[in-house]
Every structure is written in structure tokens, then in C-alpha cells.
Image (cartoon, rainbow, N blue to C red; front, side, top):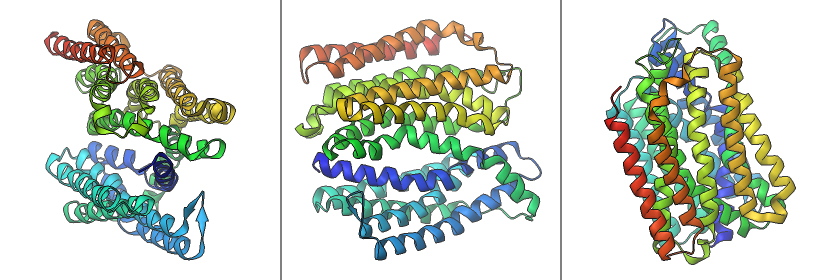
Length: 432
């Protein structure tokens, strides 16, 4: 795809994803917490979430998609038919991504989790290769691929994860709403941090700049996917945590999460510096430097997850989560409107990194404001490993800003990898 086509496709996905973010993603925290804590009302709350994700949400999305495909000619330069297909895909996604995977994680059922996630990955990857690369259907092929991947994952989810049987009362609806509604501003702000830059960029710049920015975000999102999904896997442990923290539930987890926040973006950047020019078209090479900037933002995202887990899962205070993500989203959106036209994709990359940094700082401040008894000094002994991980990140980002396929770029990437391995070795060798 050309940068302009990729810009349109990524803008389509980012905008359509907002629907899921606002109306389904807040249920993730509820399903995991209710399943992990095993309270008396847990099965009823999980049942409500399952009915919503398996039945109600897909039906509403299907009706909306059909209306859009028939009656809307074009939105933001993309045909209404394509928007309709994407809405159908979005309607099917929560069955797996919100309910089934969260249920499997809450019960620590690795087998079901692997089957559901693997089905989604394989179906989406194969259909993308066939429709976009081989058949060259462009944005239409992108949307159809999203639909096929969502359908396959939803079918697998409903086959493997059944809705639990429980008696439902209005009190359960009230409790579900009480927990999830405050998370809507938070999840919307998280969407804004990762996706708003593309439609906002389209309003002030060209689709080519949107495409370059989207490509950089896609490369950096390899790190965020690893950090986010590994974090979701340990949410049951945070849900069982007691204060003062850390206890045995989260002490070791946080050690590795602190390290991963640095080494995962460093490893991704090194891989791009060493092999990106061999895989991706020349038109996208100018995205590599801004990818380095975006990877710094991913470090801040990895750090943000730790205090937010303590606030939402351990303390059960979801209503305050939007303060951190909202502050970060506001920084990004304001910077795009002020500087997006003048500085293009690189300027937006810096704004995105600043937004994630703001989000992490506010999250740590919230744990202090609400006087959560967390002994942050418990992890001071890992500072040498963290220093190596920080050095790896610096070398990795510098490699992406160096001339592509140059000796300097290769050496810096190699040093980053050595530092990553050294940090992991130190972390595994330190006695607790």
C-alpha cells in the first residue's frame, strides 16, 4: 500500500475502534476482577458482560453498519460501504477481545486463551496478506480482513467460553454500571492516546503524513501490545493484592514489569534498526526516526500500567482512572492542533511521547493522592538492571535516528541488544 492508502486504512480502523473503546472495553476490568476475586455476585456480573458482548453489542453494530453502508456515501474520504464493513467487524470483536479472553485470564486458563488469541492472529494475518498484498484490494481489503478476523475469533470465543449460569437482578445491573461507567472516560482517553492522532492529523495535514505517522505507530505498537497483554495476564494477581503492598502477589510481577517497560521498546527499536529496511518499502523508511520517539512513549505506557493496576484492580477505585489518561490525551490533542500542520508526523510523535509521559506521572500521583500504602522502595535493588535497560533504550532510539543500514546504526542496535540481555541476566540472578 502507498502511504496515502495506509493512512486512510489506519484512520478507518482508529475511528471505528472508538465505538468498541467507549461501549465494550470498560468491561475488561470488571470481568477479570469479578472472575479472580470469586465474590458471591461475580458469576452474575460476568453473565451480564457475556450477554452484552455475545449478543447485544454485535446486533447494534450490525444494524449501524448496514445503515452506514446503504445511506452514507463517504466519511473522511472513505466510502460508506467500507465504513459499514468495519462497523460489522467492530461489533464482533468484543466477543473474544473483551469477554472470552478476559474470562480465560481471570481463570488463568492458558489453553483457551491461546486458542482464541491465535485464531484471531492467524485469521487476520492470512486475510490481510491475501486481500491487501496478493489481491491488492487496498482499503476495502483491509476492512474485509478485519471482518474475517473478527468473525473467526468470535466463533472460537463462543465455542470455548460459555456464559456462566447465574440469577440476574437489577442490583447486578447497577453494580456493573457503577464499576464500568467511570472507566468510559479512561478507555476513551487511552484510545485518544494511541489513535486520535491519526484522524486529528488528517484534519491538519495530508494523508501521506498520516500514513507515515500511522506506520510509525504500528511499529511502536508491537511494544505496547506485548506490555498491555502481559499486563492483562497478571491482573488477577493485582486483584488479589492487599495493602500494604507489595505482598507476594505483586512483588515479583512489578520487578519484571519495570524491566519490561524499558527492554521491550529497546528490543523492538533494535530489530527495526537492523532489519526494517529489508522488510518495508522505501517510502516508509522516513518513519523509522519517529518510531524511536514513539518507543519512548511506550516506555512511559509500561510504567503507567503499574500504579494504575494498584489503583483500579487492587484498591477498586476505577472512577479516578480517567485523570491520568485524560491528561495525556489532552496534551497530545492540543499539540497536534497547534503544531501538527507545521511539524508533520515527527512533531506528532513527540507530542504522543509527551502525552504518555504525562499519563505515567499523573498515575503515580494518584496513588499518592489516595494514600495507597505501596512501598515503592521495595524495588530499589533492581536499579542496576533498570540502568542497563535504560542504556539499551537510548542506543536503540539512537540507532533509529542514524542513517539507515549504516555501520553506526548496526553497532548501536547490537549494543542495545547486549544491554537488554545483561539486564535480564541481572534480574534473574538477583536474590530476593
